[in-house]
Image (cartoon, rainbow, N blue to C red; front, side, top):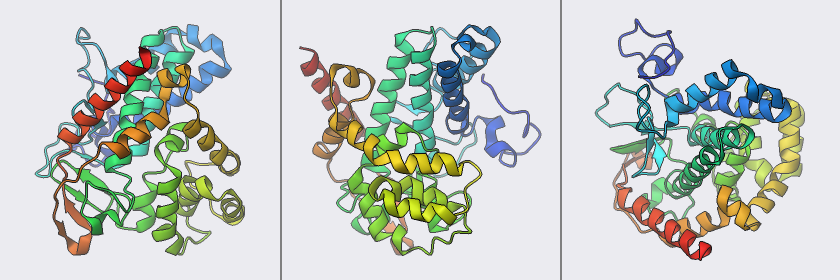
Length: 340
């Protein structure tokens, strides 16, 4: 069972309403916004941690997407998260010849970040915080390896890696597109929202520089297009805050963003990145030791053969089960050494 929107109950295939929520599609994308917002509210207004109706609502969303207990008879364990591939899959219960897929990795990271925050600010205990931190760390490692591609990526054909983002990552193929179109801004921008610290952790300075230099800087990026605000805050802000701030003076703001938050983000993103990528202590290792995951993901990769179609815009799906397991074992071995 689970928590599903009533919109779409009568639709054939559950695709028309709420992005297929009634058929359990994209829950790990959509529910993350509620979990993160709720955790922030409890941080600012601690009395909400004692509001049973409020906390039950939030924890039901967590149970729906990321239930860790086999004893919970109402929700399946880890509805979307694949512990072999170390990221989640969309599609719900609707079958597809190309298998399940993952598009907006940044929205999944937002949910896992929210679970970590919720465990920290409530009385649920440290186990939920540790679960969120572990899943977030592993997912970031996977996203950096297989979804956000630098030019030297070993897992995709070289011509496809030049796109720098995968688009729709199916189990059987990878398609440089989105479910709502083929605009370059959309294909890249869907990997940049929402703006939370989890996004900073996943998007390395080297990747952002390559993506901006090779793809995004060549786009028109008109001030009238709300996607421009996403591109600027999601990539340019990470590498050139001055230029990003200039863009945002006149850029139309996406309806999931505010100008105030965009400007604050621009002015703090590079410093946040410096702190995240340079600090490794016993505390940050427990919550998220990003430098460790970055080193692992660049040290233990190996190439996977693939084919390209449509002028390099589509590649066969990479069989990254072995890659993910090896990375996980390396990570766990490193953690054991650290604790000795």
